[in-house]
Length: 443
Image 1 (tube, helix red, strand yellow):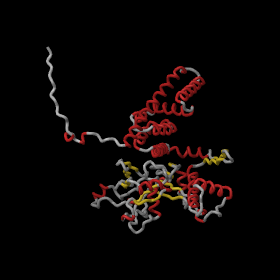
Image 2: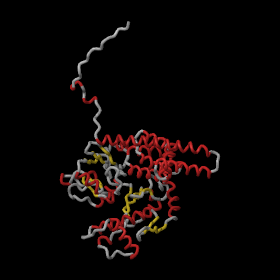
Image 3: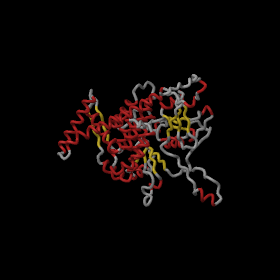
Image 4: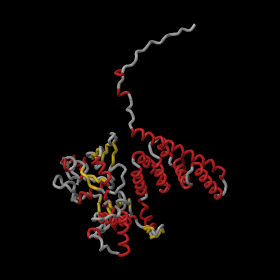
């Protein structure tokens, strides 16, 4: 006979028996959105894996057959996928390329997508850019690319990965640029309703300089009393005046005198011939990326239109004017913009040259006009910073990193593209051996 025992009767738990810290925090609205986004990444990875499996199964029949047969089967696969998913064949083709790239070539990126650590858009950018890189560079670039994708917004990630690829190819940039320049051209594309497009294909430095000059002219013209044209319309009208008449005499004086401005950063030793040629990082143009050394030397040849920033210390650099001036002097403005390269808003890609210089601690609250208290923000992020519950602070000693704290308490770190170099005359161990004081001041 089996004995049955009656379990003891437990007293109801009371509210004060529980420790609040033992329970996870209740998710807020942003947590729920992020959770859904992570689930979408997981499902996107699963979809891509199934697409690649479908394609490989269909292609098994073509093994050993002519290439023409394989092409027909590929087209058939694309058509069926498009019809089944009710999307265009172009979109289906893009999915097939993404699936093959992640499954066969970039498995660590697929793993990150499957775990919800990156978005489908990050994965798409990674495949597109790495597929364009030389085969021998891809394996070395992949770990850094995945790390960037897991930590950066899509726009920042695209820019950073493109920079990584271009820097890795810097040794062959001169030769590739020489070949590419031979393809420069001007093309007219007809439009509708009496419109057309003028398409310029040429060196990126010149194209950015053209666009920059037109933008500055348009912004100047937009300030005129009674002006109603949009910035795009003003840019187009200024371009037509310059190309057709070759003059801007009829424009306001402040607009007609505007010239192109481009910022080029060149390691100082790279400007020298001999053993230091190609030493260190490649020359970089703001908004463009790495450029051939020969191009950089030409830009640094003395033309006043180019702002030259050397990564060698320049003792005349203005770092602070304290409370003597609200408006940062020109040298400090250039340094602030050069260091950041972009708007310091999370994920923003607005070039720093088109941003406003903002005091972190407001001038009215006794903030200084110095490098550690000034940052470039686009108009939109400047308005958000000053008129919402977002809090923004520059991390002390970080070289310009900014922490944005959202109204829900989340933090997002934005780091500048470059660091202002601090140089010492001797390594610390040599100074200490000689009885010299500690760290030498920067510059």
